[in-house]
Image 1: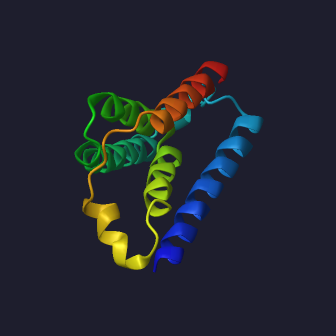
Image 2 (image 1 turned 120 degrees about the vertical axis):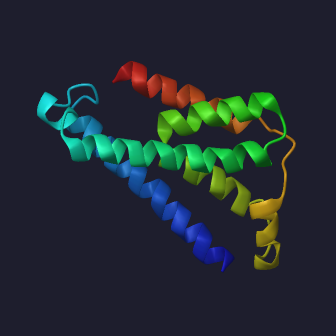
Image 3 (image 1 turned 180 degrees about the vertical axis):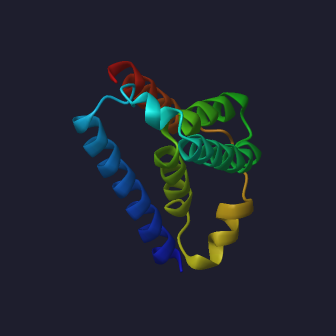
Length: 131
């Protein structure tokens, strides 16, 4: 089961990096036509995505004990969405050694490491500035 989860989140991360890169090479993120921005399904999809990000973040905020890590993970998830989320899950999945420790991924608490979320926050901020 562990290798399946690792593979799943590697696929999520890889596909998100690919599609984001592909889209960025075709059009600026801020050049979305007004007809798309005002379309009800575009707005509904954004609401759905960001509420999903917030839901995931609530779990991360519970797992990470330090306030700096919590804040950096929040910014990372809001800026990078599924990219940051898959990096978080992969970091948790590669921290354990076998499937019997999956409960640690779900329910284990962390001391609040800041290096990874700080790097993702910097990456996300840079991506928005370049866009």
